[in-house]
Amino acid sequence: MGKYKIRVKVELLECDGTKEHGVIKEDDGSFAMTITEQDAINIDNCESAILRTAHPTIRDAISKHLSEVSKKKRLKKANQEK
Image 1 (cartoon, rainbow, N blue to C red):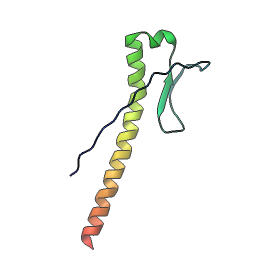
Image 2 (image 1 turned 90 degrees about the vertical axis):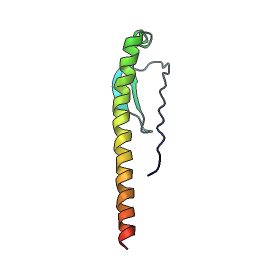
Image 3 (image 1 turned 120 degrees about the vertical axis):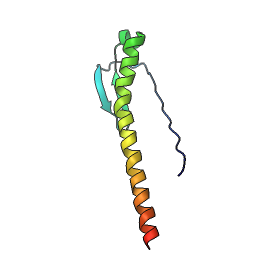
Image 4 (image 1 turned 120 degrees about the horizontal axis):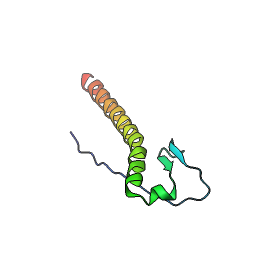
């Protein structure tokens, strides 16, 4: 079986005029959350927000990965039966 590379990218970007909100899925498939400046400069609040944002990202990535693995196994099995 092959190896898999796991890559994670976390960005904290300053933004203007955006209301605070919980985790939302962006048009590009990424997940985002807007927090206050006070939360952004507090290590515990910042870490908590990042982890809350990361959770659906991780679940989505695992779901996609397992679907792809399942498809590959079915194709491999079908090709072996021919």
